[in-house]
Amino acid sequence: MSRYLLLPFLLFSALALTQTAAADEAQARELLNAQGCKGCHRLGGEGGTVGPDLTGVGARLSREQLRQQLLDPRSRNSDGSMPAFNHLPANDIETLVDFLAELR
Image (cartoon, rainbow, N blue to C red; front, side, top):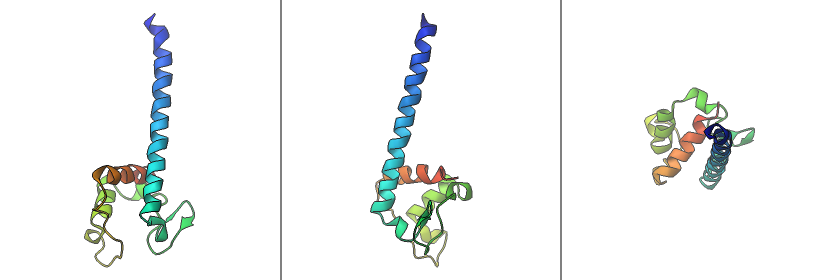
């Protein structure tokens, strides 16, 4: 009997994970817009050109480097003009790090 319950459980789990990932991506995109990131950075062919293009940033920077860039960007580039986002709650920073790390 348990074998017959396993497939629905796995399908439900996969659906729940997909919905969570979509919600997290939507939240990250909302944060990017609210914080004005696309005013300087391009993402998916849209946005500014002052800062680096974020398309594929997850392949260029580690999660720790992404976090550091958000919290203290001058530590990585003392001449840069990117503001620190250390005023954001930790869960928002992690949402952005998760999203950016997946951009490969």
